[in-house]
Image (cartoon, rainbow, N blue to C red; front, side, top):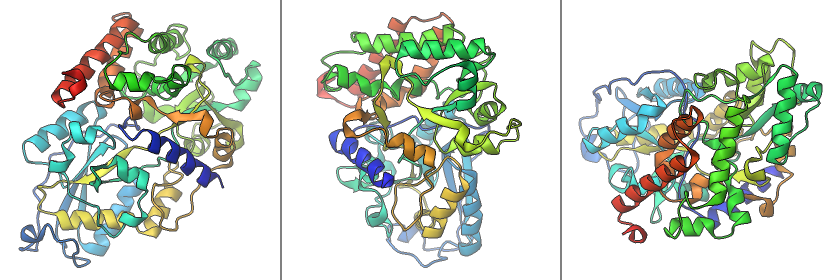
Length: 465
């Protein structure tokens, strides 16, 4: 029943606003690898690249490259890649690039006509404006798995009714605040529903010797979700604000709620709620720090609770029942964040290995392989496909989502505001500068507006001409 409710929430958001997407997690430490020269024993492969079907092992001896930002490729997917090679003879070379370098490197390669066989990007509006997906990707609308792929995800990976990608990410839930119930109880703290209550909760946790919030900023992408994952409240308290932003009838800097949200983020940092090392803390360490009991709260996917409990740093013996979920009440938000977009895969239109790349995507969506990812990637509770898999929503996830209906949910900021997603890393950098006193909240918002204007003009948007 809850799966239907989650999909219903996604349906509501996707039908209302099918615009842009971003901010799925980008993390890790692997450095970018040089793209290997593709090898193929099929001499006619380049001439038949547009053929929709291929023999099961038509690419045997071929290497396909999969280029993605940090942590867009689960360890369990790489295990599936080995299985794929055993079955087909096609080797998969995963090229993982640090988040702050990924987009620039990918665009450089695409613009030079040297794209990887499969490239990753966040689904949504930026596919058209930033990645020129209609020129740089292959039409996947008629692939064998197309009917099983979520129609809402297909809208986000497509342009003008043509689907160019596959969202290979759990979009059925978003990032919420995971909290340690035992630490809350020991501190006399309660789950906050307003910003004032959040301050009180954090003060009590600090007084008990616990750092309230683990906020890893070294990766350069995570912080902004604390704002955008709650900004759906803006259109509730000021109906039409999103439409006005998209028509260039107002700006971020002119909106009092946007300024208040950024000021509240700064308040959390200046009050010491992120601890002493948040500028150098990394997302890869989040589960471990939460398991240690040193921190009480972190913005994570619900499935991460399992990883926290299984961490070697869980010396206190925490169980999954010891953790819960709540919405961070920036702007006193109590509307569930809906985010039906995420890291997606696209086959490069100039690849000499298009058929091998298609085989790989089809392999990932075989029932047993979808189930393998769900069972082995702790933060993946489902995928936006229906191939007969069994989702692994925890009772904590189900109970949390059951609190919200369509009237109390909304699309996250980056999915509804044009020309925002493309500057995700820049905004994070500006917020970090604000935390250390190098920028004001006004300057952060003006920076967003200036970059939006540049992106809109480059896209030929008549509202910015």
